Length: 596
Ligand code: F6R
Image (cartoon, rainbow, N blue to C red; front, side, top):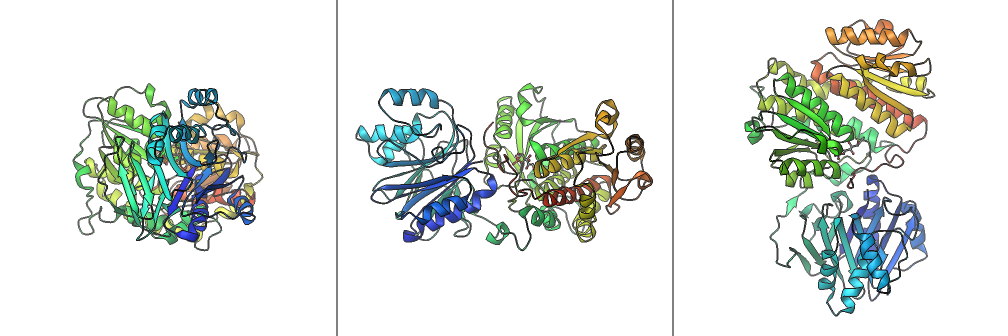
């Protein structure tokens, strides 16, 4: 999704800071980029393609100015061309605007502005903003008042940043799209996401919907729609800038897969008592929901399916809904809790489902990685998964941490038989994951099946969400066809697709009834000559029917899901690597999907 960076107070370094910030936002996914600096005049340089293309274009330009904004664009209105890249200008070239989100009434505004004589150069919704500011300036308003008047006309979601010729100030506003300020001693930053300026400061202010910020070398101010000053808390970011580097790994995704032991340790720290082994999740432990509805998208949806199962195991009615389909869900009953599982805390579909849940009178909780995110701020409660920054577009360590956090939630809010055993298994997760990472044969499995036509993943119970997640990871980073199924469903249709060119990854842990039945399904595919890759802890005899085996240490079935997923992440990673795919930024995908 689009990214914003802004900077004032760095004098001659403004342009470098902006381009550096854009490179830190690349992970969000984009197809063009641009910058605007405001000196005596506003200067703009923008290019479709990569940041490298922008850098090249900047070589032949001299852009100067003490205030600047930059943008990475992920196309929504109009194709990725130079003209459609941000920043966008008014007719006089005095007002430059970058924008994330979607302006829903843009067509109406555009028609009005065209009738009034404005000339548009792009297909974007964003371009209405500089023209609206231009009109307000022509009516004699000062710069801040002009930007405010323009913002007041917008309907939809936006994070907007504006610079105006001859003014060393950035004007910014948000509604339903994240914006965060960064404060240093004599410089100020603005971004859609902290990594954009984390190399310069760790002091941040999260803007809320309806707030307006002005940043100049003299200082910053946040106000509400009426212009009244708002008191804001200054937060400190607790992760290191180095965490957003690759640390010698070829890809962020591989680094993040390897960070899972640490991520899980961070998630459990202080929440599992070292001596008693009991779980303490603070006030969240008192929520005692009579029922839970989970809402989430993509990988987080798979984590939510797993979380709902944990609660049902503990006797609490729990359902999972794709956030984008929540409108069709039954109303939450009684003292129900609606839980949004969202790594970023900014996914538009999930935010909208959570808002709908609040309208229906439910209490809400965000299970998120991002302190200060919209989900964390808008929900009544937040359970942080503490995975640290995840830069690869494909979620890896955050899925593991979501599963760990959901275990803590079910243990902390319910009475579960065998809790001690589960807690022990959670504590063993970091070392068990490390054992897999040290000794995995996933690369050789990837080598064997890299040319396959399609990949299927099957699992039951706690391993069903893992099968879905294994397939999602495979398709998003390899661009190959992959599907995940509840193992028992295979024979109800998908079996028709199974051939000797479609390996089936079967997640079989333990030796109970679930394992026995899944082995039955494995035999069905084996009989159709499909290669079988068993992901197993060796407790059952699935290996007898498998062509390849990916081993995981023996543990509680709930924890086994996390371990099996690590092996599947590695297989997808190595298949994608062998195919030369853009692993950290798969085509068409964005890290944080802020449009519905
Ligand atoms: C897949 C992936 C996406 C996200 C989904 C929700 O690897 O990352 O499917 O899981 O877009 O994102 P969050 O968790 O930020 O709400």
